[in-house]
Length: 298
Image 1 (tube, rainbow, N blue to C red):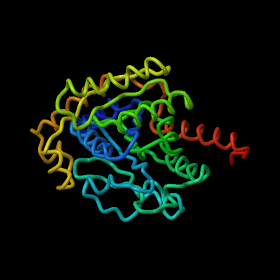
Image 2 (cartoon, rainbow, N blue to C red):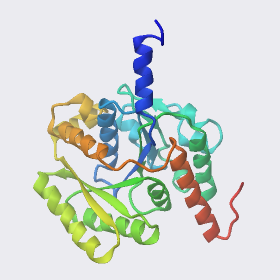
Image 3 (cartoon, one colour):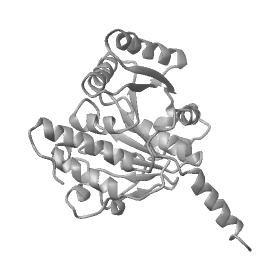
């Protein structure tokens, strides 16, 4: 048939529809234990179920667990990329739901303490990776370490996960303050996790917003709520995203609602696929080297 088969034409149309910049979203938290990684893997799975090409980068370089929550047992991870043993393309693995994952190493202190130059190796790896992606979700470490700042600043969107605990609220504000005052991040999305209902999540957001409105020059956006849900805990024990394991649960429906909100975010202005992310990471690396009085390698 002239012009190829119907399947070929449909595939071509899908590729054309995806010829837009990759949206790079960092998912962060002021403290551990608020469900940040669970948010990342379930949002990725929900985006994939809605027809998006999605990849997760596990950027908690020393205490990685994205692969654990997704039931993956990768042979290689980012440690092998940093050491030069494998390319980034060789360590990427894919879930049954079609989400690509760049796994990191767990229990390796040296990965949690990478130098600026070692981070540059990861930058080069992303520069060489050729994939058609709609979303790259970066699951950062908890807190305000240099790696968290590096990956958050290189992303177009930053989501800060918070739960209704005093320490979580205080540490979330501290993270937002560092990103805003010290690194020029102008917009942060706040997601309330393990909330009793939407009203509790809204109140939680407003506690943070009252302080940021007074002291910081940052745009804060309420992304929504993931409810306290036993189905989500069961899915974690099954090592599956709740949107796949128990799709009718309240938490799975909440993730589906988040997909609509994420799709409504402004399109990135930068062209290309992962070039934006790599270039922003490269810029942060060169600035850090300049601050330290070290000349960036060519």
